[in-house]
Image 1 (cartoon, protein in one colour):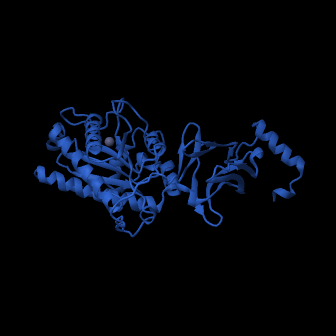
Image 2 (tube, rainbow, N blue to C red):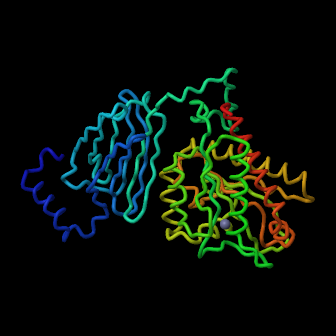
Image 3 (cartoon, rainbow, N blue to C red):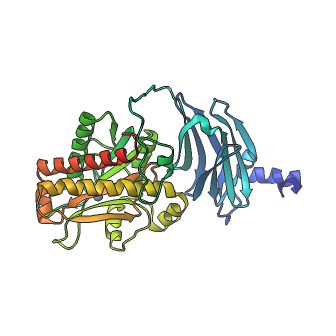
Length: 391
Ligand SMILES: [Zn+2]
């Protein structure tokens, strides 16, 4: 269609873009910039979208490419069918075009044999989509005397991570809340933000002593970090696992126990109470979330996150039950938590106990219980890594 548009109309469109006084009522956002950067260890491509938009990323083979479709968007004419040559050995070029009247498509031509992984995520203010591509520098020289153990299938079969034999090297632990946001508060005044920070610090200490995994905390002190920023940290650090630690509250004082969540639409309506509390500081609303979730959630991430959640929950309950009476296993559940959305790795959120229950608040106030929680989570992480066959 574009071929038949006379030059004068194209020129007018360009003027409209330069002087954005018209175009009112057009729901499409205009994409005006695409920026590739080749860093020493990876390539980052940022697409300036300007306003929150749904998008969908996927791969195609022969020739190899990653594409990102951005909905309700149009291209600024200066970007029409633009091709940016990269040629760094693993990314060949980047193309952008108007796929149909409401969809802009970005295509990255590359060679999958030369890359280790890629992450697609977004940042806010202004809204932009970021694609990080990490080359496969197979130079670490890790040789084991015993042949590697093949991965166990997840409950839903082999996910992509297992088929590729991807291991775990780096873990991001996210102590919930912090700073101006105390989280929930028990009747004795115990604040969720302090309890979960201490559990996270203890977990980091155990992991660093017992394993050679790299452990990164989203916060190490009492500071406020927006929910959406937390998984951005995990993506930037190329983390393999993301674990968010929280304590729960329930209007029924007698209600107690431990739950592990993974990201998906809720399986159980009662979950929405916990979701609303944990999402409270987000500036985004629930309808935006549904839109975004539907577009960006990947089946593969759900499979691995479910697996991680199940192993975490069962190890944590197993460990606590050897030390304490009447530990309640509330099971693994799914819910739409903002803090789990942006991450491109298996991600879970653990509600370690209820601060609204006086017995559990009493336990959470002791360093011994917090250490036992950290030990149980540690065992869950180890169990998951072992199941990947790359421990
Ligand atoms: Zn919380």
